[in-house]
Length: 616
Image (cartoon, rainbow, N blue to C red; front, top):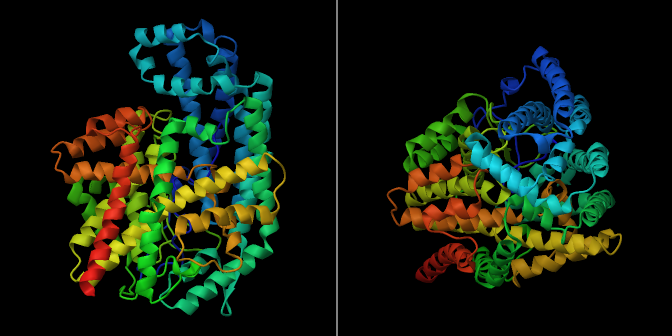
């Protein structure tokens, strides 16, 4: 039932890296205060909830197993409400355990606490496996009659619809219970091995030993030799550990293939599409539109960037290099806060008001600490608590955009919490809406305040790079995953096999201006999405295209846009993407929808090319 994985990570989870935590010149970076969940691992409140959960799960099974088909509408509503409460308590416990763990993944006590919590949750909730299975055996006509009779029950219809979408792929009750019990030593264990391996890696960059975030940060330095040294250090360590990463990917892909085969799912991606409540043809239209646009997006931009850098070809360590005219300064935490909140308030003061508690009440963990999970994410916890945001804040301009991105998630999660535990969770295809919109608001504010052509050029280029990372890079990731899972169905993959699959999408997506250093073929190894959430990555491109279309409606001056936007966020997971976009006159099933979003990126590149022509 309930587990903890890295949710809502930034578009390139490792896109931001680390330096010293807190202190000058960044200011005092905040830490999480997890006491809103539980005061500590030995808290009486935690024991109370464990005891309640154990009794609630066994009581639920005793009261309802074998009886769901006989319940009337009021009885089924009571059943759903009891199940939702169990979800809430188990979610609170695992959120606490997971957030504590990701603050320091190398701490043995935290790792043990999370693993033990997951084991207990699995044991306690095993009696509940019958619920979905039995519910899916109830006739559609019976459920429809219940929904018509009881409006409170009808509110949960989207949950029933999603559960019943899996009906054709449901296994026997006994097999479903087995898979539930086995999960803690299956994918969850391999996820943990990956996390602990990544967090424990050490890289020697010109005699300085550092973690993965600090090493990746070297790829964004102004000095090219420093960038090269960082890339070479990454290669050395990835190659030394490639067998571990290959084993993780082989095992998880095979486990997924076995599960998919037994369930009769038509493709490796099908389960993700079902959970996202999105049609395969919509995802395929998105993927095809992006791949067709590679030449006018990434290929064109990186050719321009090579010219700016004075290079005939780019190496992989140049991909995220700052432009020569970029101002090399650190943005302190207070300035970052003011920048994002001002941008949010410019859209609507309510949006800034919703974001302020993250800064004031210990809802953000921003500093870099030994063993801390890399990257950034926003975790919603449970509907009767509040979200938490994790960053590795370095004071770079892109870190400010990451703050805007994750706060967008946080605001979305706060608004959606009003739907309750079961309806607040947003499908991944829509989960990136508020985050990418928050980035766009912040970018537009900064762009409008740019004082020189060079500053505007730098900002436009940075935004294009972020959008390429969010759209082009993520669709390339998606293609890599599709190839990986298809190949794994035919047999075990050597590290070299996986390397070849990785390189097959890199040149296509990045373009002919790139050369690829020896060892770059191993860079698939550190991408956590492939491990934690197979096929997650297309949600970023979906979200970016959706937000670009939304922002166009906003820029056109729709007087009711803010009200419609907040209504969309408040809906959480209670509506299909078609229903949420309809008030804005948008339709994601129309292939032209994606072209409209991609045209915003190409339009920015047009501006950059025009500025280059003017400078000549």
